[in-house]
Image 1 (cartoon, rainbow, N blue to C red):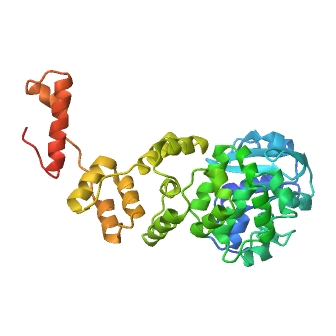
Image 2 (image 1 turned 90 degrees about the vertical axis):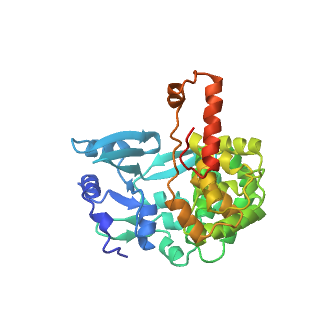
Image 3 (image 1 turned 60 degrees about the horizontal axis):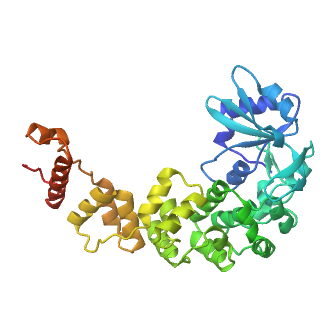
Length: 385
C-alpha cells in the first residue's frame, strides 16, 4: 500500500532526520497518528512520531550534529527527541511490554516491528510508513480505518490494564472517526475497568477528555460514557449530558467551539465543585478562572444591543457567548455583532481626579467607581465630571 502526494513527507527537516536514521538501511519509520491521519485524507498532519529499530543510544549517536540537537526525553522508555530548525521529532526504539501496573509499563527494546505493533493500543495506530510512501500494516489497521472501527490490538482487557488512559482514547477515537457502533469487546472492557481511571494524573485525563469534548460526535460519545458510568469516574458531580448536547448543537451550527465552555455544561452551578474539578484536571490558572466565570449565574434577561455592550464590558466576550449559547439565545447575527464589537476603555484615571483637587485615598476610589458606573449606564458616552 502506498500513500502518494503527501506534502508533509517532503519536509526537508523530516527528510534529514529520517535520512540519518536510515543511513545503514531501513531502521526508522513514521508511526501512529500521522500515518493514520494521512490515510484518512486529513489536510493537516499533527505531531510526527518515529519508530526505530536502533537502540536509543544508537539513535542519539547518529542524529547528534551541528544541525540537529538531541535530548534523552524518555530514554528509559526508549524515547529521544530530535530538534531541527525549531521542529521536534520524537524517536522511540521498538519495544515490547514485559510488565505493567496500569500506569507505567516495563519494556524491553526489540528490533521486531511486529512485536512493537502488538504492544500499541489500536490497530490503526500500528501503521508504519517509509519515506517513499510505503505503508506497513501488520495488524490490519487500514481495514479498520476504512470501516471507521476503533478496535483494540489483542485482548481489550489486557490493553487497558497496561494503561487505563486507553479507556478514554477508545471513546476519543470513536468520537473522532467512527460513523458506526462501538466495538462491543472494547466497550465492555472499558466499563469493567473504569475505576482504573482514578489512578491517572489529571493532566493525562484532561488531555484526552478535552479531545472527546471537541470531537464531532461528542454528544453521542458522552451519552455512552454517562450510561456506562465512565463519565462519573472523571466528573463525579456531573449533571448529565442534556445541557451539553443543546450547547454543542448550537455551537456547532455557529461554527464555534469552546473546550472549557463544553466542560462547564457538565457541571452544576457550584463554585466549590467547579474549583475541585479544575484542580483534579490540573487546568491552567487561566482555564480555571474561565471555568469559574462560566459557572456563575448572571442576571441578564433582555439582551438588546445596549445590554450586550454592557455585558461585554463587564464580563468579556467569551463569558457572554457562553451564557447566550447555553440558554439557546445565541444567533449568527448576535455572534457576529459580539465578535466585531470593540470594547471601550474607561479613560478617567485617578491622576485625572487628583489634578481636579481630589486627595489620594478611599474617597477617590469611590468617585472613580461612581464615574465608571455612570459611564456604563450612559452606554459609554463621554463624561463631563
